[in-house]
Image 1 (tube, rainbow, N blue to C red):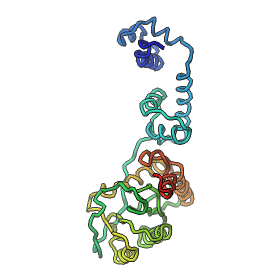
Image 2: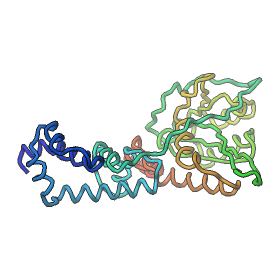
Image 3: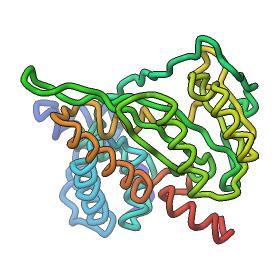
Length: 306
């Protein structure tokens, strides 16, 4: 392809896409607006497919496939999935252009509302030691935690209820160190999650950050922190961003597996949560983790190669 035709390639593609969307648009007028001749446009359009055309068609097919499997994905996550799962390395702009052409859009985001129960008479309040320093290069250096609410039962004849999910995340690999669900947002739920975390990472002494929920400000939980040799940190009142990664995790999880869906029974909801936690840890790539899953990044960190 000559330099001139290469320079006009974006114009040719734009005109072609406009006409596909709006067949009544006059080609001659679009060509004049693009400062190209009508003849050159038709000459470009009638050319045989080259390697780039074939590759772009293959990419478009994969983009559509990924969107059908994961309608929650935006174009950036689709691009990362192309690289991670199919070894197709392209830039964001190409994927965005394909998404616009195929009218691919991710499902609408919902605002996450926390279910923290503040303590009326806290036994211990920690300073905000983490101080929004969310980056970590070492495993078990910084842990964040929170509890969120999930509902089940949709019809009048169905039993309605709630379950609460408690999660502890490692800020290095964004991997759930531990998670526990229960029928009540109480001390038992939080304490069990903490015990499970220290069992999975014996000897870990991270900064342990939470909000000021009554479980975390209790005398019993403070003693657990001291016994484990950890440094306790807490968000300031009415500053959800102090626990930003945890709030972000809930938003991602609920957008991808909860919002827009109806769970008739508790068992159905628990099954969906378990399935998502497996997906998030072992299959969901993250750009912050160099286009790897939390578990892949965790294993590389253990080997000391990241």
